[in-house]
Image 1 (cartoon, rainbow, N blue to C red):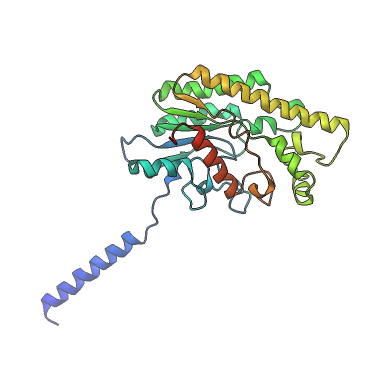
Image 2: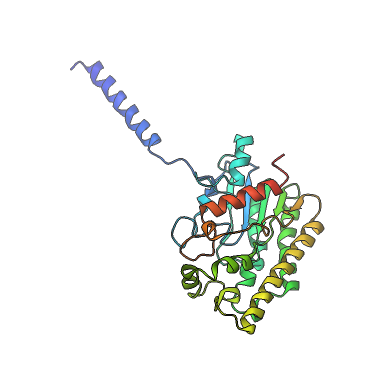
Length: 283
């Protein structure tokens, strides 16, 4: 083979190899957290396991692609994807700092991470774990809950004052007990320790158990009232969802069939739809 053909073939093979290396890489996931130097915009999610998409991929672990806030999967039309439809420049700029088990005390640290992300939108859904810590006697006191929420929002206002913050109401967990305590599958799962303050002895009609559930219901209402006040104190860049998420009439087909507590993909999509309309961005 003439030398010039050897050289040409070698160059072509090198180009093919380079193309294969480039084409074989997976596209970066929007919730991965990487960003170009100096970039800004996008959305950050703060909160607990609900916002991580916990249990929505048929295993009891976080599944961020199904998050109502920052998900990039096909089954949930998240807030991030709706914002991306309007502004392609935020592609790859969705950051999920929510963590399973997080309580209001974790909010400040998560907010500081969102500040470092330099996002323009922040969602906050916190409080379920302040209720579900154990028994009623160890639920986070209302005043302490408010103080922790204020600290988290203060970190956002100080570090990212122009960002738009959406504070989301805590879902109606009592409603979940109402629709699930007659379902044997849910009852079996709840007996493994899911939110015992509310769901322990789920079929009991004993006055003490009824009083315990009523106390949990009241505490969630108290927390939501504090979220309203905290957002109002934040100023015009904070918007409360008006109780929209708390009013969602969850049914068992909107929660996963493993713990019968966390939203499945359909439930996450419902949360995305409700919060989008409540955010003021839909118009």
